[in-house]
View 1 (cartoon, rainbow, N blue to C red):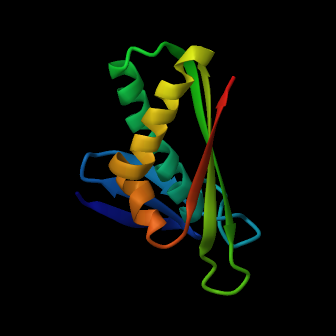
View 2 (cartoon, rainbow, N blue to C red):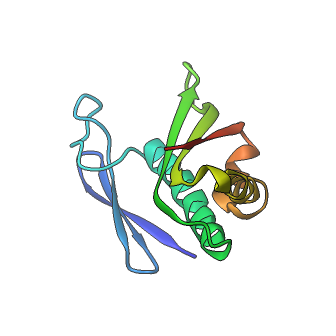
Length: 136
């Protein structure tokens, strides 16, 4: 797995993966950027959500759980001093599934967070990742 980050202008960069996909990273105009992409820390939060989301969808499909919507919201607190690092991440899984399937949803989320989501597991080595599940 490889990624190359190429400077575009100001503080904007394009991340180009060996798969050919491109993602823009940037910062706010106030911070000297163009506000043309996610900040690296927001991209990290999105990566946590995307990784666990893929796991959960795959497992729920195997469990034959019917759902029409899944959103994973991430919120992180960071230190005041430089380097500003996350002190913890809170994930909220919001899923439209039948109440009788809640135990299966919980099992899928637990397995993702404890065994399969490499991004969350790497992050947990440096800051806690907490999560809740809401049926919507």
